[in-house]
Amino acid sequence: MADKRGSAKRNAYGDELRERREAKGWTQQKLGTEAVMSRSHIAHIEAGRRLPSPEDAQRLDQALDTGGVFVRFLPDGKLATFFEEVAELEPQAVMIREYASSLVPGLLQTEAYARAVFAAGFPRLSEEQCADNIRTRLDRAKILDGSLTPEVWAMFDESVLRRPIGGPSVMAGQLRHIAHLGEKRVRLHVLPFSSGAHALLESAVTLMRFEDMAPIAYVEGLHTGTVLDSPAVVEQSLVSYDLALGDALSHQESLALIRAVAEEYEHAQR
Image 1 (cartoon, rainbow, N blue to C red):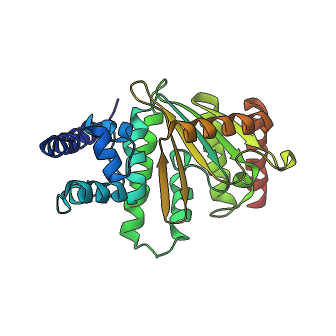
Image 2: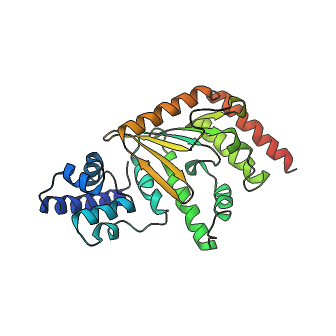
Image 3: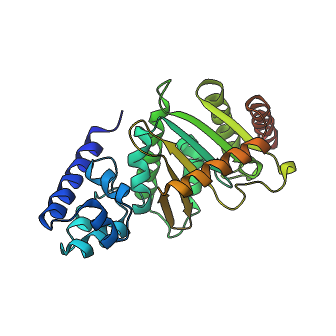
């Protein structure tokens, strides 16, 4: 179930957008054309299902001549602005499928692993900022506390297991945590080095499916991230995920490899 405060923010944002659009006598299609956004994206925002990115909010302000209202109306959070929409959508998803190319996905990270990741970033974070970011990341992972929703699949390139982020002790704990989730809650697949080139080699991706709206894909790079909701692009992303899945180890084989690599880290720290 979605966070109540998040829903209130989305609903208020959607109501404001609908009122401003109707005051100009525009249809959703007209606003989408003027703001260079899809009609379906406008519909999702007005229905309180989504929040726009800062860039989309700026285009809405320009199209509706609202003097920055929709940019200022975006919630202030501790997440990177490009990730706020994804964090809003995660609790609503009925299925989340992740492919990670170099880092353990945030939903599956331990506190020690997350700390090592944040410590390596730029600009440098203060201890307080780092602690806030870790709390936010661990709070997001609480959606895994339930037994049913969302269903989560995580596919990793083998490099995710082999890169010693935080050192052997941190990695051993992180991989044991992933294996525990794999036994109880998360379906795991590892793309081994031996698989060579695969369909997701170019980018990490998160795919989300919902009960009451169209699926989305999310891709992220350095200091940037993009929610993709074009049906054609999302379908291509789904097909790429399925193709890569065909080259991955089975769930049980993946669990065995994750445990084996965890043991290697545990031996290394002795």
